[in-house]
Length: 256
Length: 256
Image 1 (cartoon, each protein chain N blue to C red):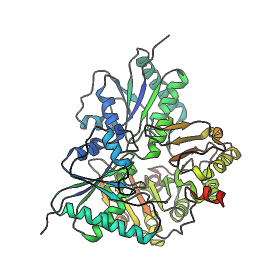
Image 2 (tube, one colour):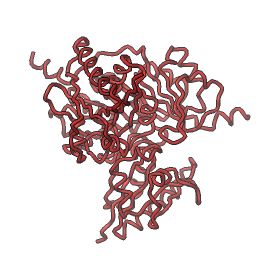
Image 3 (cartoon, rainbow over the protein chains, first blue to last red):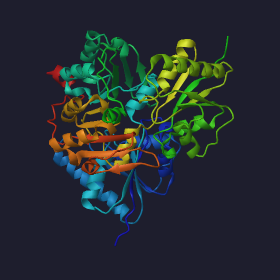
Image 4 (tube, rainbow over the protein chains, first blue to last red):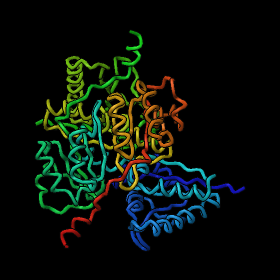
């Protein structure tokens, strides 16, 4: 029986190497094989750059995995299959593979899909996910704003689903985190103005990275072209708080 | 002019000390005064326990801040005011205060409110928030599940808002994170059965702590009493994906 190594997803946080967890740091410091995602052969890897900025040197035991920028399912399947095979080849030798993840491994990351593909080929492989700081957690911290407090509610959605849905979510939730706002920026600003929520908006470009940019007055962005990695956190000060049932309510009711 | 120290919110993650960031570790290792929340005089502090489990010893320069378990706004205001005054007294001496935060400082944490109260009294104080791993990020990692992938959408809400809203969110979003599910557990299980989403549910108690418990088949929890710190992650495999506008779409349309 093969004694497989473990596949570890190490969340490195959004870019500031200091936001990586002690657990991720330990995983990188171990003798595990490093795997990291790239867009095409020879391209740089954002996840790898975080590790290098943390002071690590790329170990000899490393392998870039190509995940191309395409929505063609057949092409993608080929690349995923190839990546999973490369990973399994290392795991087969009994060596752990640590996959470097930008942000948090459970939040818009490729790790879960890589893991599924690996497990589909070799079900007995053990995996481990190290949670990390997501870009919107870092964005809120940098902007000095809370995402949610006490009994508040939050929705996290890519802006691309359109203005109509954004409008609904802005009014239904205490906090709306809109990702990849670039193509709809002007429309979002118009909505914030319509609902008098401009004061509750924070625009954050490249959250948690050395190039991070925070804009407190989103109206100044009208007509501007922003980076693709931009998000807006919208707090709704006007939401009618529904009544909430607190933790012990049920018990109390039963006692009556 | 007083040269105030900085007020630092250090997110320590949900409980596993290894999930704290390097930045939080550095803040705890500095000579900053430690402040940490407790429910009543002499009570233990969960945030402090994380720091102690990480191998730190409580420095002499430490102060527990009392935030009582009450919804009485007057009582709360008195305690908040007292906490802010204690913090400012230290900052006035030019010493930094690091406030120990369980989970992430922007996600259901007391730090943002403490910060606001401090700034309302002394606007020139500089603050800094160190982002961290939230309980639901850790829960997803422990359960080995993704929260969101590619263009997916997520809502995070306390379950106490009731079954009707939960039902709506379960079907509107790809992922629904339900917090504090204890009082509504049976109703949530019934909804998951109704919509054939049981396979997409993971129940996690005390995520990221040494007492963490993961239940993959939530139906086994019917009629059970669970811990107050329990959450359910619900993936909706049936959601009709709306069409998404991708990052470069707008540009292309303009060019036509």
